[in-house]
Image 1 (cartoon, rainbow, N blue to C red):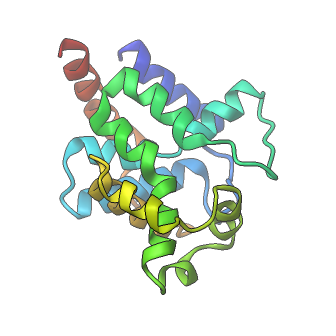
Image 2: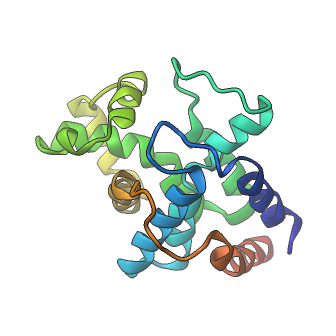
Length: 186
């Protein structure tokens, strides 16, 4: 297994069992999100983006020896996207970078969306800037990965079902290796 993909696997082995203020572990959430992407016929890059969209949380845990600060925004989307960009390029990193902005966007543009958020997502929304303003909405809609980010966000919101059986994290490792190799050769 290439070192970069191995480092991601290690992060999930070390910190993936931790909860993140939801009913499921980090790994279960990642697996469910990737399964939803695959069920919607997303391409491999978007499936892996769905799987790894919260990698930044694990990187923060790893850096801080398992300690988190729940009263501030850890900007996990930017942290994760930076790491994923080096390994997989923009097709994976782009939707990850924008998945928090997509929540803010959906809160601003869909009156019913806010009511679907989990309590943890509602709490983090306030720390992440709340619903977008109209100028922010217009800018976000021009983002190159806008459509993928919104799809990822919607999968993220429902990928929180305790005990749901989906493909295991290890199932996606060969796809990650292929995407990493393809990016390294580009």
